[in-house]
Image (cartoon, rainbow, N blue to C red; front, side, top):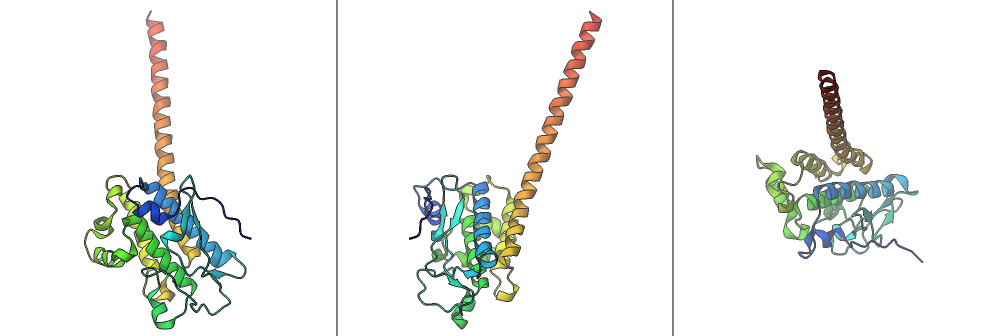
Length: 231
């Protein structure tokens, strides 16, 4: 018997595409990308033997009450030791590695491709069944790039440089040649670096604000002392 943690916010797909949902902030989306990356990295590089998920999609990413993500539905997962051949692909159209069409074989780099699709879902809130990759490819040829397909909920409410950095990672994951895609062990630190840069900037701003407060306090104290001396 398998026991699963209750994930009160349902799937990422529901949050992104259900009009009754409030949506996700950019901070939440970036954290979800990192959580999923960590999860898939563990399957590929931490599990013994390594595991290929083979069915990564937003419907299989579950969110808890804090909007932290867990990778779910291992119904199609296979240990890497097997040949990875499909025995029953479900409704994964739009997430499937194009290489699979010619080889009929899943690899870890197939999971990496699917993860790249999920990143663009987080950025655009466009479902793969709604021609997401066509929008992504058109945006890649535009001077405005990913800015052109950014989810309207994020316009003016996200750090556009962080969005571009995450999109760059996604493009690498979607490279047509599996060998040129990064491993999940390379993807995770790249996403973490985006978050760390943000935290570093916030810490510097916090320190600067603290220094300003201390300076103003000292000026006020000196003013009080001078007033006392003058009287």
